[in-house]
Length: 510
Image 1: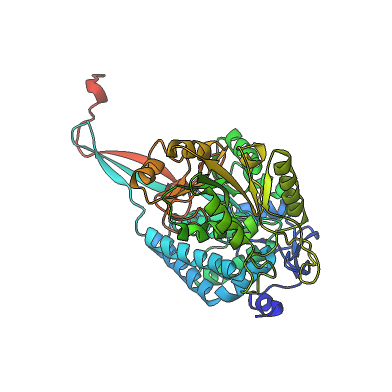
Image 2 (image 1 turned 90 degrees about the vertical axis):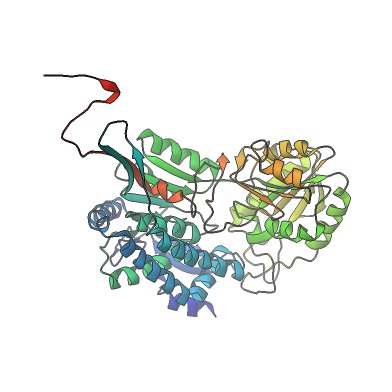
């Protein structure tokens, strides 16, 4: 599938409106975000930046849509989401190609991301019939208490470039079946994937007479995001990105007593114990280099027992020397480019900092040049051996840099190393020792939101609540009871007697 074919299938033009309430696309500022592919540096297309007036129109339309959408029975809302999932199936190949080309991840990862969208739609359809409350016994005679959940209203979604469509769908599909409407501000680095998703959603919504404003799109830089975060009409902001961004969002939303759902940075480690099955190390390699190290769940640290350290080191070096770096649309390549030249600068700066802090390069890094690497965004995944967990190791660098650390004694020592970073997203242990595995999963084990045994850190599975602790933000998405974040809880007491008894035996007579 060539570039023009998937752009045409997704109804993308050279210049595209960036503001939408669904079927309506609004004329914006006249300024455009230019989307250049990190694959070859070529301009793909432009997306028009939203104005403050555009934003006001979007919020007003969303408010009107919410008043109607919330009255639809939840299973009927789920039926609309089901149809959207089916439309994604029809256009999976085209949208997967666009994700790969605009963001730079491998084609298989791009297709996999669209599959995540399809999967969350399936999950949300089932959820639409399971928005359960509960019933409680009252201390008052002839009274009944119960708890129910109502939609919040407008959900603001701020997504990141590394998963330009999946993260939005995790939020939107669940928010929609809960009775909410959504306003999406995508990353300014990947505007076209957002426009494509919005156009597909608009088709389904129009076919089902869904009110305009249930799915909205605004476009621009951080200033456009600030309109959302500071708007009291938006009760929940779900933001995915860096810890720095998340702290700003959290402070702004908290200042107006709104709600935040934050999915931020990760500094994920795999502990490799002396009993580890070495055949499982391939998962560590993928976890460290997939998406060119630009996943929040990327494996960034290996904490290896001294008895197997040299064996693991040798195996990793051998595996890294076999990696093929190049055009991610070519299935023969393992690693594509970083998102842009700023990311390349951060990658180079991190390597230099690691060397200054005592690091030894086992697999050299560097920027690739020449035929096929014209964008300047292709870098070599590298491995750096560290004697201790220095500042740069504790810092999340969004690039394919893997740090090796050794522990010589107990599993407690390894767990302590694992936990001694500000982030708390994903973690894993490779072990055949049941006691080690159970300790790792216990309350004195990993402090991350995700803790795995004999599987890597990379990837999220629909159905399990995804997210982490500490500077990862504490938010949860895409599974379990994460749907409750998009709703407000209400406790109800019903008196079915002709008396009005007061609590705690209080007497009050007139």
